[in-house]
Amino acid sequence: MALPTYSRKRYWCIALLAAGILAVILAIVVPLAVILPKRGRGGHKSTILLPLYIYPETNATWAPLFNAIETRPQLKFIVIVNPSSGPGSLPYPSDQYTTAVQKLNAYQNVQTVGY
Image (tube, rainbow, N blue to C red):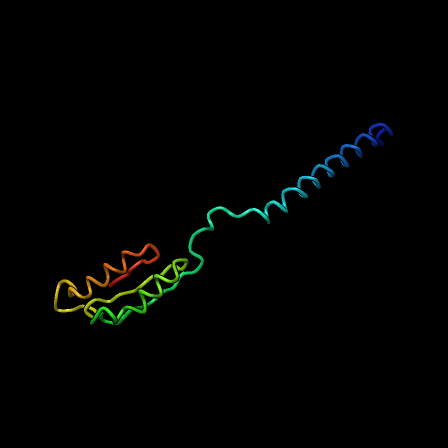
């Protein structure tokens, strides 16, 4: 059954109006989505996974790592430590190791993982 001329014109007017509204919305929304900053992206851009199997004999032993952490706050560091080089004879790590790990944990952009 064919639509009367009035109904066809009305149908096309509504379709063109809807397409025009959609085009205007897209013309506004797409550039805004590209221009405006994204929320939740102010965090760390990259993560460094660092197996740190060096015993902190002196304060200078881990100094390059501390320097890198301090000069690159935009990076997140995951530092893997291994006190006593695996299962040791002592129940706790030495005072040197404990002090160095506590210094690592004081940084906001460092996560320490130990085993």
